[in-house]
Length: 317
Image (cartoon, rainbow, N blue to C red; front, side):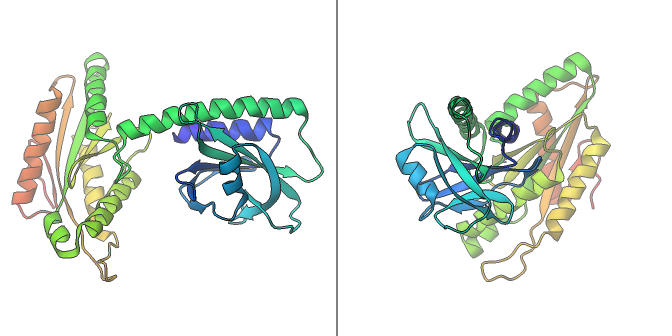
C-alpha cells in the first residue's frame, strides 16, 4: 500500500504540475486519514487523522465532483482546502476518488495550484482518467489489507504469515540460505487485562506491534499477530545468530518502552520468545519449524520470562 501511495503521489505531482500533493483516505463522512504527502520531491509521514466537518472536503464527499478552493498549509507543509479568503498564493484542486463497487468516495487527492495558473482542458481530462485508475488501485489495495492485516494491531494475520512461510521454505529448497522464526508472547498479559481492562490490553497490543515493526526490516521481515497476545516474525536470509540479535533487541526495547497504566503510571511490559532456524541442509516443514519455536517460548516462560531462547541452545538473559 505504501509503495502504491508513493507512486500515486509522484504521478499526480507530475501530471498536475504541483509541488505539493496530499492524499486522504476516507474513513467516515466526518473523518479521514492522511494516506500520504508529497512536498517538493519529498514523501512525508502519514497516518494523521483529519476531520472533514466544516471543510471543503465535506463538500467534495457530498457532491463527488472535483472542485477548486483557496489553499492553506496543513502543519505548514501539505496543501489543504479552506473556505478562508486569506491569500496564501495557491489554491487546492480537490479530486474525489470514487469506488466502482460502492460508488462512494474512498479518497480525495489535493493538489496545490499556483494562483493565476489554470490547468488546460486536456490536463484536466488526464487527471480525471487518472483519478479513476487511482480509485480502482486503492480499492484493490484496501481489500488486500482487509484480507491480510489484523485490524487491531496493523500486523499481518496468521493466515498471511502461513502463506509467506510456505513461500520462504520453497525458496530455501531452491536457492539455499537460512530462515528463522521468532515466536513472542507478552508476559502476564492476562493479569494486565484483569487489572486494567481489555481496552488497556488493546493499547499494550498496539504498542508492542509498533515496537516490533520499528525493530525489524519493514521490506523484508514478516511480522504477524499469531493469536491473542502472541506474535510471530519471519526472518528471511537470517541464521540463528542474527535471529537471536533481533530477538534480544526486541526484548530490550520492549522492557525499555514507556508503557503507561490508565492512570499514567509507568507500566513494565516484557516479552518471552522462542527462536528456531533452518537451512537447506536442515529442512523442516512449516509445522515443525513453528513447533521448535513454540518449545523454546515455553522454555523461556518456565525459566522466569523476559528472555529469548534458541532451539538447540539454552541461551537466556
